[in-house]
Structures are given as C-alpha cells and as structure tokens.
Length: 318
Image (cartoon, rainbow, N blue to C red; front, side):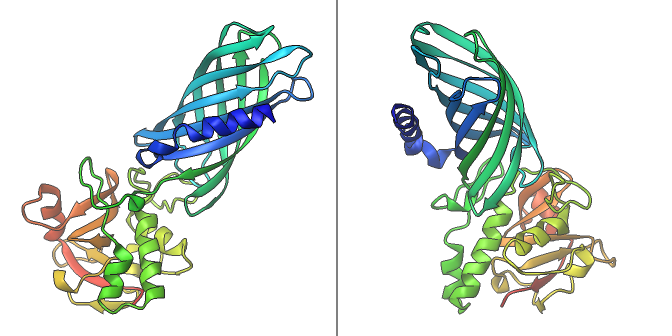
C-alpha cells in the first residue's frame, strides 16, 4: 500500500502541467531476475523533440523486496525513437538516479536500454508492453524488467483556442462550426474526430505508401485514408481514387468545410497530391518534409505553391 501511495503521489505532480506535454503514462514493472516482489512503479511525462525523436522524464518507486531493504526513489531521463506510432516498436536509452532508505540509504544511479511495443490505442488512451535491461549501482537490482504501461497522449486539437508557430495550428471548435452551417450533430462530431486524428500525426515522416500502419509515416493519401479509417469511414487509398470520392464541391474558400479533401495537380495533369482541409484556409498533408500544415494563400511562400496547383474539392461526409 505504501508503494501504491507513493506512485499515486508521483502521478499528481505533473498533472497541473499535463496540457503542455505530449503524454503521460504509468508503468507497472517486474524484474525477471529479482526476488518475488521485485517490482517498479514509474510515472513518465513524454515530450516530442524532433520528428521521431522524443524524451521521457520519469519518477520511479522501487519497493524494497528483501528483508529489511528499503524503497528506492529515483528520477530518470530516456531518449526515445519512434514512440509516436500505433504499431511500430519504439526504442529508448537513458539513465536514472535517486536515493534509497534503510539498508539502501545512499545515492544510487543506473542506466537502461529497451524497446516499447504498442498494445492498443483508443483515442488519446494507449497501452504498451515495455522491456528494458537495467544496470544499477545497488546490488541485486540489475536485469531484464518487463512492464505494462497505460497512458494518455494529448492531441493538438485538444488545446483550447488557436495557436500557430513551428507549424502547429489548432482549429477552434471544429464540431461547433460544422453544426452552425447545418451539418447534423453526429456527422459534425465525426468530422471533428477525423480532423483531430490527422492533426495528432503532425511531424510524422513522409513514407511512400505509408498509412501509419506499422510503417511509421504516411504518404499524402495514406494520411487521409488513416484519419477517416480510424473512425469507420472507408475511402479510396490513392490520391487519384480520393479525387473521385464523395461528391464534388465548388473550389471556393467560402464553400470549404473541415474534413473536405483538397486535390492538387500540375497544370493539365492528373491529381498527384491530396490534403485534408482543417479550417481557416489551412490543410494538413504529408509532403516531402513530413506531415505538416499549409495555408492556401499567395502571401505564404509554401502555401502559394499549393494554391496554384489546387484543382478540386471532395466531400466524403455531408
């Protein structure tokens, strides 16, 4: 009970700042080579750094399992690779340091390396299976640790208001805006979720043929296929197929709604690129630089390129 209470205390520490983080997860681990109760409780705050690289800051409690042994408390830092995917395993390497009590009343430190395999993801909630090899300065604590994690990952659309900078944009109240123009509530909520799912993949790399299904990235049509598919809407897989999906909408800014598929082509050619409109002149797409937002405007250097190649609009949900 004391260990559970300590883990609960650790859980409370970062919650006040959770909105500024990419995710929070709680891990319950077990050391294979340890005594019967050689366990670990770890609370981790995750933050993306650059593309597929991230960092985990964690607080850990290692209950004392041997007679007379005290608990260990520590703070760790891990660098991760590919921890944003739904199926692709992530790898990590890092270190931890802390203090021990009773016969372990000393400063201790250690290092670890491991792999984290996603188990499931439902909305912002996800679970993973984690294996790490750890090496501590305290005797008897080394070995392979297996852990199950349950966590929450923030999506950009859950931030209130709109923010723009470093490529981040969050549309205001997508569902409310759709209902205001006559879209039924159920369909408005669906499109809100589709747009939010696409925005959650900001920063993922461009991968030819990628649909986020174990590939770790997306191509242009794969991103839209993934965003709609996560919410039970089946659309064609390719850009050419998506250019004929749903119904055609007049190519006019006033007619656009979040969730519309924008099609692009070189002059006189076939459709070669697609993007998902998110509102206020912006669309999300996967191009050579990865999943990003662009603005359809002549005064935007990147957006000007796409504005001049914009050829059509398709509406899948009306």
